Length: 558
Image (cartoon, rainbow, N blue to C red; front, top):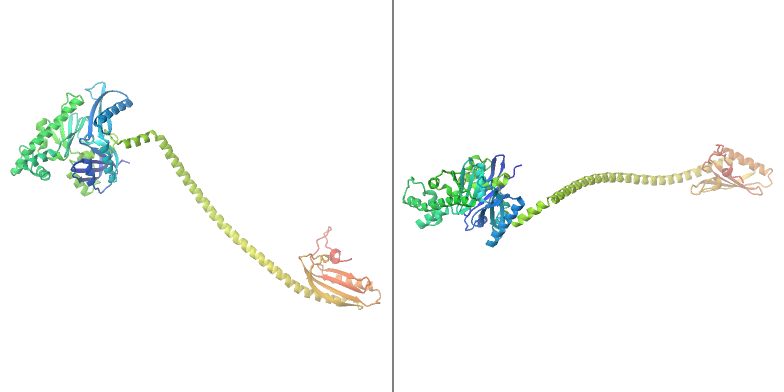
């Protein structure tokens, strides 16, 4: 995805904010704003800046007396040695000025005029200046990516959007208080510098001639003043204003000529000759200026308009109209945004000491950072996996809890049913005992009525529920037992035979589950019978048969 950045050109009268991205060979502008400011120092202009969009990551242009661009010829050495040489150069200059300097450098393209040496472009700016710019940008919600001299941004705008030929071209951005100059040969940079001067020279000249304010002088400059010798003046004010600016135009011409001389002396290109001059910036709009400079420099002078090859379809109607109005003043901002979004651009990136330390730390510890990122990624994945496992465990726990609740409810109902069953069993046993005791007593009376010998009679009969091991009724399993006590007439013949016959008859009439226990007094005149029709059935014997009533414990024989 293309990288979107904002190029910021902050001046004394206006601040240009141009946001966009490079895609292929085309730059797409997404936002634009021109903010009027009025300050004596460039950094003071941040206070007046208000935007409808956030700058985000931004490249800020710097110019003026606080920016120093030098050219150093050095032997061709390794990069680390070149960095040391430039560091010594910056420390020497900083020691002379007594101010902290931030800097960056880049090699100029190989020049055929120079053999065995490289020419280094070294750009420096005060640390305090950059810190003030950073504070102003952060107040607008932006993040300073780097600072670049306006002249370098102008060069990138020219090489990306100008018509390049095999010729030497001077490109000048005429601002209010500074002129940024670039000399390029084809696509190669030869010279870049910022010069003091600009459209203020014309306003000051008019203000002095008419004894008026600079604001009124600016109106006369823009509306009636002209450097065209063939211009027809509408009134005497126009003629006077045009004559007033001739001296300022001469100063501007001298600035451009001095830039060519600086290039010849500093870069050691004694045979340098211009083929063309391109103008931009607000000062370039002065009527007749290209023709005036052309006569003084003896080369064609034209207006540099890069916007014919820039995509502005994403701008709103208001932004597009504002860009058309300030198109000459916005070339540097376009160059800043372009070089920040296109890594192939010629780069000078000046940063503060604090930013440099952060970036050096990140570069030295890139593997640690990568390992940290991987560790964080693994921890994140592990946390996600653990979260999934936890979710599954919670789901299983919910299911188990529901099953436990159902089982607990079933168990509780089972216990309730068992308790109810025991209560019903106890009630049934009681009813069974009551019913059984009555029925058992009636059957015993019936048997005695049928089989009791005439010389025997019953003296007592009773029924109760109790245990009797001899009848096979264990404790805890009490059953109804009928107890019959009787006597025989004294002097009865064959008393024992009659009693035994009576007992056998009774026993033969009893059901298999009945148990009978009899006790006969030694005199043979009294007997006692314990009988239960509800005694537990005896376990089968070894031969598989069930003992008959009266045998063993059931039989109750002595």
